[in-house]
Image (cartoon, rainbow, N blue to C red; front, side, top):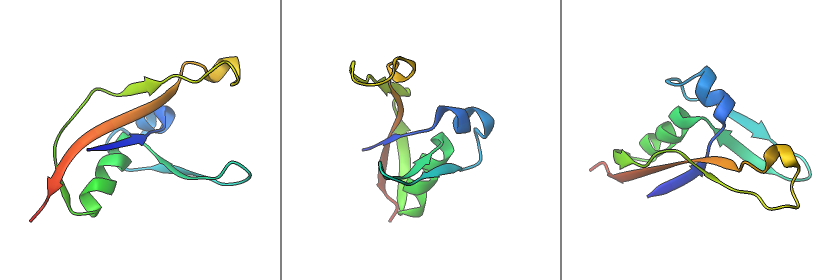
Length: 83
């Protein structure tokens, strides 16, 4: 099972082509892929995707800006080693 934060805007703009944002700086977050990028990461690691769950959001607490309180979009996929 792989659960990964995904970028909603990139997923809408490029639903079939893997893409990602590189974010560095004080709050380092190396890569946030779109949904196709999440699938490609599993595929390139040698996994065959068997299924997945609907995209979901993990809510943020009151300490975050109101515009982000909807939560962070995630994708969950189930993969088996491609032997």
